[in-house]
Length: 262
Image (cartoon, rainbow, N blue to C red):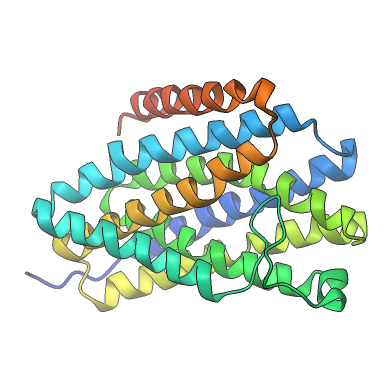
């Protein structure tokens, strides 16, 4: 297939979309800074909602679009590779999953400063920028849709990140700053994605692999972090709020696709 160089706007606009999406983590931190701890039932619903949006867009848009450019087997391999890549990152890089401390973060001093937490979460957010870049290169409206989806994911994630940091003794402003900083690797990821797509040719086949990988990445984030953490924030008596949030998010994802005509 013919090599295609990406146009400047195909690099700049995904970067800006990822910058906005990444900044949404800081909005979550700012909410905690201004209003204090968010009610657990509400946070559980919001995490479920974000998970529903991400799942529907991952399969309805990313994977389906990958199928238009790849064989079903290739799209499945790309999806699996994306999910496994996130699993490897998840298992090898110490970080705080939103809402809970992992056992491999054991240094009290590092917990106090929040440095390890910030670095770990930032590295986990990096692939989300790649997702925006792959989506935008294939179809600008798809890139916008993915950026909106990541915004909706990052706001409750910022809340769930800031709250335990404050509880661990990190200053309120510093905790909110960590939440904001953690999302700033997403625009870097978008630039890296644009560079890789351009270097590898920017052909439909390459973009198809990027979309399949993106679908796997987003699905793993949802099933490994968003939904489990949503349950951590909800008691048995209000667990149906998570299911309600999940279904509401899926319906919202469908409607968003209709509105953007993706």
